[in-house]
Image 1 (cartoon, one colour):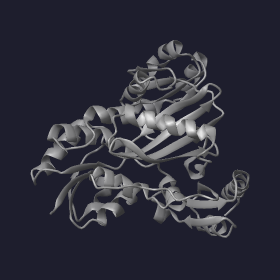
Image 2 (tube, helix red, strand yellow; image 1 turned 120 degrees about the vertical axis):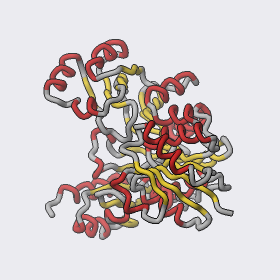
Image 3 (cartoon, one colour; image 1 turned 180 degrees about the vertical axis):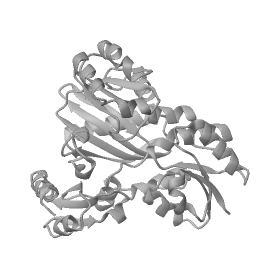
Length: 383
């Protein structure tokens, strides 16, 4: 029997590979026209942005003329709310519009988590960039300023004081944020000792598998071509505390089936939630899971979205695994691949990014730190 899937995607190659392995799917696609070539064999409707929900609604109704959808798959951060809207409007099972807001809209997310007594920093939402100082006085300087919708650290700024805000504004630092034309999230800066991510698979309303990783350097201060982390000892007290926090977050989001990516700050008062997403983490995190546990997070993501059964199990670990992105030059990839401890060095064509993606392993955290330093040095070496 044919299953009818509506896919909201950009050029994420992992989800395309997972869906292509299922010959019983009829896939219709909403995407931007820039990615039309990827979907030449599918019925496609184009939008300028997934954030334009009016365009998304019209595109979904147009594609629905070909028959109802059994599943809606949102493969990118920006498409999560759009997919929730479509499910609610067209009565498709899965995450509703409200639930999608909790997982993608930064103010709605923080409000939901705080209502469940989960640790989040103080925050406020304002209409425009010009309103930031007023909100910052309320939550307390210094602050992080960001769009309410958005992935990674795009259009995100640290602002230390009212004078700092004025200087940055005069210099045009907030022009990109203002052009987005959406409300602005103002959050009190979290003073932390380290930044972590906890990734997981949720099935039937319970966490089937989860693991904690630590960033070598905080992502906000790290360019994407050096983004890196390693899997920590899951039995360590700090990791166990974060795994328990992840379970509470999944319950707060009312997530029945899905893959999660939770950002966590380690502070002197305990873990504080940064943000949570209901899709696999990017920049090689899914591939790290494959090397560590034999679990493909994108495959688990698709299984959850299509309501297919799954029972992921982690295999025991006797080494520490890490990942890093490096500048996308072939000489960097070749030198990285030659280093002892490197498992693989993937070229940009295989990662869907401009970067080389390196996965590596060492006997313990200290050794993995040393190998990470050697890999970082490759990024600084001349071509």
